[in-house]
Length: 558
Image (cartoon, rainbow, N blue to C red; front, side):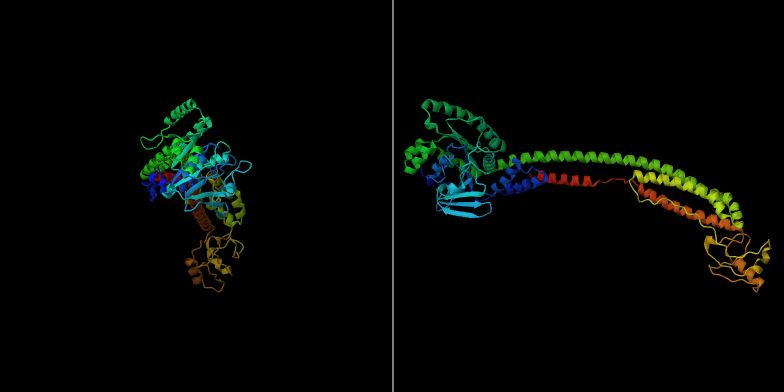
């Protein structure tokens, strides 16, 4: 059966599944959000799926360990010796075989330089292993263009490096398998499937949602008839244990003698092609490719498998973050509770000291205790001794007690912005009146006053009985020529006390008022320091909550 007839009903998939593209974008976003390890196989799978979902061609990959005849099998399917099949060196890069009118090779290097040449001789330089059996590190992509009816219908072949040799080649093969729509795993009849092959079969294919796999037995013709039956039976058991996603009624195990099949294709010997098993494989590929292209379920399975892995990681991370948030909230609540208790204890102690100070500053009490002795001190010009003999010490004691609680608040609430309470005691007044010696009647005071310097406020305190005129802080000059009526009028209009007792009252009243203002201000500042918000907010919780939202978006997108 000719290639044209085999694939005459085949239509390439023209529409790309937009849903898969969206999922691919979500998966790529998840790489960064989930901090998936740079060298992990999961990240490589996600990146591979990104290009895979946008590929309109149906990709058929052939893979096997070195020297299992995979390139020979592909050449037999193509009908010509297109790919290198020498024993050594062998395939050292992933070679994409696509449709082209003429046989041509295109090499893309890592520096994006493109090398094109007719034929495939250039493959020996760029797409085979070197003397150390290592791949060419300069090669980014290898493409071969061939005029074949199957390729013209939107199918592309992928010849992969041999496995079981170097880890680097194995990673390349594993990544490329995820981007292939149908996979042919070539088995050497002389070796059956080694333990490593079975593990690769499970880990590289089954566990990654790659179920469109066909096993092809090569070199069966080199065994005697009885050995052929035994080997085929044992491989049939392996194939049946694997639920391949193939059309109903089609086997996932075929025998193809690759080298005899290629020779028969080159000679045009159809009978020998049929005896090699190649015709049966070609017929099966026709139906499988057509059905899979129509249903378009083969690619979704890959994305579903990878998405499940990413979902699991996202869910675990989200659960861990939720626990972190809960722990932080518990810590905050505990801290809030401790702060509230500390606030209560400090505030109680502070209020006790404050209450004691308020009680001492209570004006009637303050006047009763200090007014008379202050008046005497003013008359005797012993203000400094009076201040230092108990009055100042009392203030310092109250002040220190209050500052002690303020320091505790600053230490516990980690705040150093509270200015310590510092109560200043007004200085004694400057004597600005010349007093006559001896005790004179009040009516004769003005007769001896020559000049009075009138200060304002609490500073107007004089030692001994005096007379003064205070109007708006101005200075009046009184002399012996002033009339008695003017003197009496000025004395009556003055608001300044005329006795030392009244001056003492004025002094203590003003002092009490100023200290009370300072205490109120200090109390307000202390309350700000100890303020415990009703809802404590943590920037860490905000960041974690934002990450939870991102994880939820990823889970929704998948």
